[in-house]
Image 1: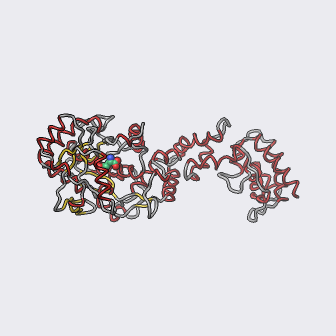
Image 2: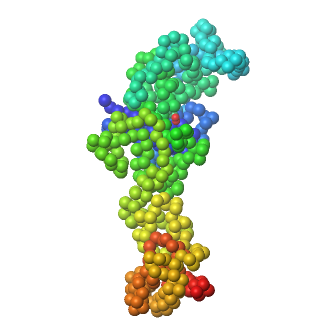
Image 3: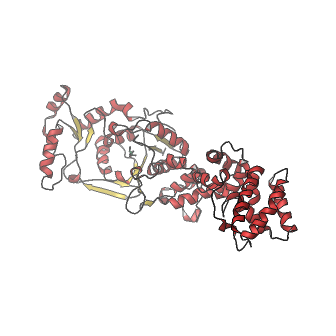
Length: 488
Ligand code: GLU
C-alpha cells in the first residue's frame, strides 16, 4: 500500500504543541512507510482564521524539520491544498448525497432555529436539529435553492441503528444514531464545514491514514456514514490522546502554555523539543530500544511504530523538557553552542569585545535554556553587589583577613602582568600562593569573589579574569580590597 498521510491544521494561531505532536507522528509514519506526507490548510471556518497563521504554519513545519511532499507552498497533484481554494468542488458532492438521500437542503432561518431550540431546551432538554426540512419534497427544495433562497445542506443521519468505525488505537467506536445531530455539511456562504471537507478531501487526496486528536473520536462515526453513502474506502484512523498540562486540563495557548515558536524563542533547541514531543504518548519498542531516550530524527523514523502509541493522556512535564534541552546543549559541539549562544551573550555583553569562544567553553554544559544565559553571565558586564561574608569559605580556608591579604598580594602581581592570558594569570596566582605558603584556594577564591561578586560562577578566577580583561579585573580587585579593609 502506498501510504499517504496528512497534517491538516486550521490557521487559528500558533502551532501548539499538541498540533506539533500530531504533525510529527503523521510525518514519522509517512517516512517510516516510505509514503507521502501532505500539508492541508483547513480554513473553512473563516471567522476563526488569524492573519498570518498560514505563513506561521509553513515556518513552524520548516523549523521542526517536517518537510511535506505536497502542500500549498510546494504544490502536488492533488491540489489546491487550501480548502477555501477548493470551495467550488464541495457542493456537487453534497448534492450527490442529497440525490442519495444521505443529505438534504435546509432553509430554516437562524431565528426559527433559535425558537425551536429554546422550546426544546426550556425544561432542560437537549436540542438537535429536528429534521424539519427533510420533509420538503426534493423538487421543491431544488426549486427554492435555484431561486436563490439561502440554504445549508445537512447530513441526514439515520434515526435508528448505530454508526461506528474502527480506530487503530481505540478499537471499535460506536454511537447510537439517535444521539447524532444532522450536522451542516455546506454552510450558507457556500463553504463546507470541517465535518464535510475533511471527508471529501481525505478521499480526493487519497489519504490512507488519518491521525488527529481524540476530540474527533466521537464525530468520526458520523464521517463514516458519509463514506458509506458515497461508497468510498475509509482511511485507517489513528486518534491521538491529548497532551495535558496536568491531570485536569489540556495544554492550551489560552492558559499561557507555550507554542512551538515560543519554545524556540525561549532558547530551547529544536531537536530537544522534537525528541521530547515524540515521547509524549509514544514509546519505542522496549525489546529493541530498552531505556533509550535520545533519538535523532532518523532514529525516530526508524523506531516509529503505531504499537508504541498510548491511549492515556500525556502530561507535558516542563522539567523533563528542560532536562532534555540541557542534555542536547551539552552534547552539541562547542562551535555550534557558540553560534546559538551569541545572540544571548550579545544581550548583556554586546560591544564588550569578550572572548565568546572561551565563554562558550565555560557555559556549554551549564546552559539549560538559552534564555537563562544572560542572567548567568550578567556579572561579566557589571559587578553585582555582594556581601563580603562570601569571602569566608571553610574548605578554602579563607576569611576576610586571608582574603584581604590575598587580594593585596595578587593586585600588584597582576598589575605587572603584560600579557593577560588565562595561562599567565594562572601562573602568577599559583606562584603567589606557593611563595607565600598559602593554599591555591586561599588566593583563587578571594580573587574570584572580588571579580565576580558571586559564590558560584561559570569558570574560576583565572578564566573570569581573562574574560574581563586586565583593567576591569584590577578595578574589581581594588573595590574588594576597599570593602574588606572596612571590615577587618
Ligand atoms: N483542522 C483540524 C484541526 O486543526 C484537523 C483535524 C483533522 O486532522 O482531521 O483540528
